Length: 292
Image (cartoon, rainbow, N blue to C red):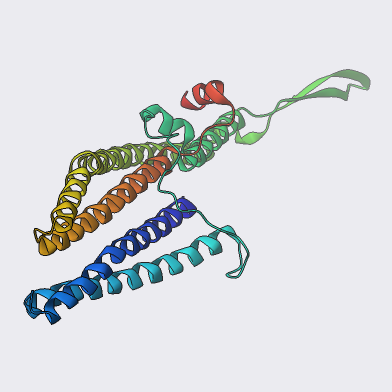
């Protein structure tokens, strides 16, 4: 889970840096052209300065994203056991396995490592109680016996019974019974908390999924069309420099928000998988047995 989270955060920072670098190329061209127009008196210097300000702002953002990506990459390498200078190329990606997103509550009981430990502790407490119950019945000892009766040697059978029979191992049974109830309560409490955590993680996942869908299907296509229209106006000589600048800024903002939305969705999916637990190697049979 730690590797997945670190990889996703590194991927998001890397993708943000790439998107910002793509935006800087057309802004650089606009800065150059608007500076010439301002020198020729065809554009107010204050308007031309807006393009330079936007370029400087995006350059600062690019430096920040690259620094974040470099730091996150070293965290990923550390988790993977790689040295900082290891010749390994990492490819960014915001996708995660969908192995647990659609699982039900029964999967939590079957696959959660924490619940598996608590279940094992309860079973151990149950076996201890059974052992203590057996201890309440004393061991009878049967063996040969010889005695003299009025000078005659007699052979027979003797039965010995330990004196603590009246105690019936009450203390051991009570202690084992209490331990079993504590183990039962610990498992039930952990299970209820896990179910609550699963519900919260799923709610967060659904919210992140909805936000990503709106950005991906509605907002990003809209701003992309706006950029193309502004480019056509500028190419026809009908002005539109400021419109293009604003459109490029909105396009950059929308794509950065889309990356964040994809990151949040994937992180929420990781949280669901963390609550449910890893897939069982035994398939459906192991799942059913663990659920019982």
